[in-house]
Length: 119
Image (cartoon, rainbow, N blue to C red; front, side, top):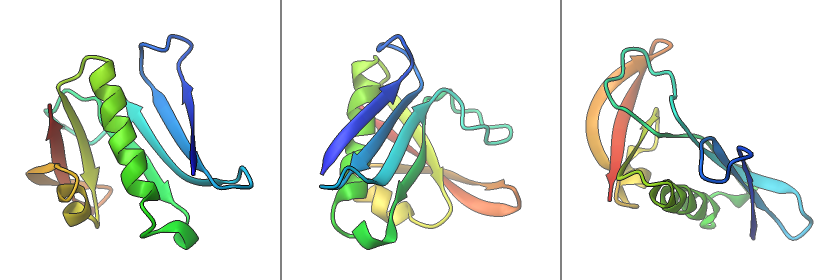
């Protein structure tokens, strides 16, 4: 798996978008680091991990884990000590990578878990 990085023209700024590519060069997963994930009334300052997706054929292969770990590393490279996300369905998966529960909230009528990864 190769990772392709797309970012703002200034390599030292948000947003950062990663795409995981298979051997054919097909995108099999994505993850982004953005300033604000627009969770209504969220007190967390950001940045936020967003748009984490892995094609169903590549789930449980480590692609998603690598994308999230790389996004966290890039947030540290940009000088952020804490990075946030919210998830509807996989908080245990994020916990396995060092993320911690902050609170539950609602987004578009769905309960989500808000989490932080601290430096």
